[in-house]
Length: 411
Image (cartoon, rainbow, N blue to C red; front, side):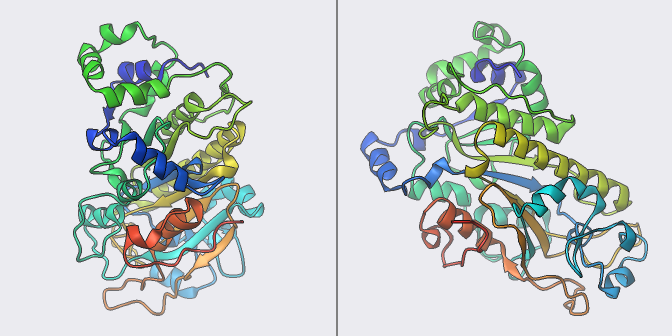
C-alpha cells in the first residue's frame, strides 16, 4: 500500500478537516504539564478504536442464548437455528456470520459484554446516540462528547497529529464540541486517492481547501504530522473490500502515516482515538439476510484490523470497542425484523484484553412491561474502563458520578 502526504490524500478525497482553534490555542506550558501527568507507558500512547454499529444492533441474534426455549418462542421466524450457531459455552453462542472471530475468542483476546444500556433508555435514534456520545443520563443534556471532556481534562500531547480521526461519518459523536479531530467522510475515495495524490496537486484539485490550510494554523500543523517519514511501515495486510473495509484501510493508513521509525517508540506520534462507523443495523424488516451480511462485515473487518495492527506493532497497545444507540426488542415483529429495544452485547478486543463473557446474560422470561430486557451493565462502565485502566485518567471527573470499570484488561 503506497502512502503519500496525508494532507494531499484528504484533499483529493474531498475529506473534511475539522480542528477547533479552542484546543489548538492552548499554551505550551499547559500542554507540557498535562503530558507529564500521563502515566508512564500508558496514557494516550494506548490507542482507542471505536466502532459504531449505527442503527442499533440486534443483540439476541448476535450473541445468542441458544439454550433458552424462550428465544425460539419469541423468534419463530428469525431465530438462528441451534444447529447453525457457534457455541461459546453451554448456553451462549455467536451468529454463524461471526465465525472469523473465533480465533480471537479462542486466544482469549475477545471480550463480550452483555446487557449493555442505561437507566430509562430512550428509543429514539437521535436522542439515544446523543446519550451514548455525551455519556449523559437519559434526562440530562450535555453539549460535549465524552472524549472531548476527557481531552479537556488531560490534553493529548502536543506532538500528536490530532486528538482523534472520525472515518466514514460527518458526525463527530464522542469528539463533538471541542476535540481536535479530523473527519474523513468518504474513506473509499481516500484510499483510492492515496495512490495518486501528490503535494503539488493540492492547489489544483481543491483550491478552497488550500486556502483554508494556508490560514488555519492548527490544521496545517496537524496535517503536517500526518505526512509519512522515512522508515515508516508499509502495510501488507489484505483487505476484502466494501465500505466498512475502506474505513479500516483508511484508519490503518492514518496509523502508518503517523508511525515513528522502528528504532524509536511511537510516543508523541499519531492520534489517541479513531472512530469507524458500520451502517445498516436498523433492521425493522427482512432482518436475517441483512443482519448476517452486516455481522460478516464486522467480523472480517475486525480480523483485518487485528492483522494490520499486528503488522504495525500496535495490537498490544490498541483497544477496539463496539457501541450503538440501543439494541432490538426480544420479540420479532410481523415483518421478519426487530424494533427498537434496550440492551445489547458489545465486543472489546485487543492484545491486552482479557477475553470471555462479561455482564448480564439475557433472561427472556423476565422482560419488562414494554417487552424489553432490563439493563445489566451501564454503558459508562465501558467508558470508565477506557478512561481509567486504559488511559490512566480520573474517570469519575469525566463521567460524574463514578462508574466501576470492567475487568477486561490484562495488567
